[in-house]
Length: 300
Image (cartoon, rainbow, N blue to C red; front, side, top):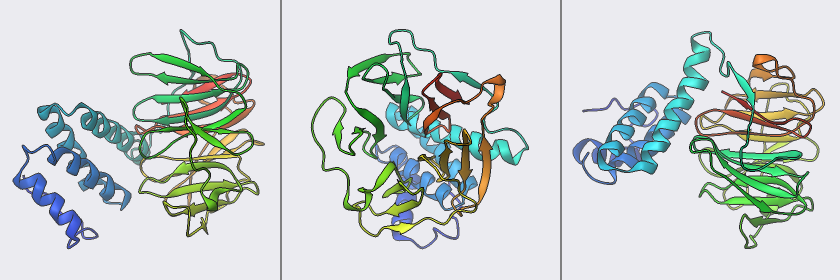
């Protein structure tokens, strides 16, 4: 099937090479990952109709070739398009329901940090029990590791979990030091991997900054009416989420810095945030808020 090339991407060598691979060699192992990457790139560039078409093609190619990881990623990105783009365009809520995360094997004390990726792959930092808990909503698995003085957890673009302590240092979950933080992030209170590379950081003064992959090239991010935030994350479409801890709410900005949503303190279903400390968004667009008094709220 021939694909319509967005004007912004036409003529770019990398996009053209990926399209040639997808269209001329759809049975190759590289076709599904190429369609996934290019579809994601086009969505970030605002060409979401063409991008969603490539994600669907990636899902079909990956399913036929048995590439389960690629299929899961494509499925999650399509869910994010539905939740974060199509629902509001149709006048519907992005997150019509909310619930407190229920665990079966591990008891949570005071959750102060949460990180998310994939379709419900979570890491919860539990200050009350000095542990970091890895939770998979899909299969219900829960694994806890004792970690003292943990404050936040971050997924790297490669899928590693970094646990950041109260002094600003970090280690890989399961052991092993890392060169952290990058130079441009040393005065930040929270960080998030950008959807197309690099990092976003939140300074102690509440300023959002953007950095390159190596931590260089720091520049402020312009936002329309940003609160004094205490946590941040970025969704797969490039929207920025800031936690306004004082107002007990989450404020969402699009890639242009325009405010597009405010969530809290009351959530769907009658839930109410009381002491929110961190937030995260997974690849399917679910929103998670760690509330130290109540648990982890899941909005979907």
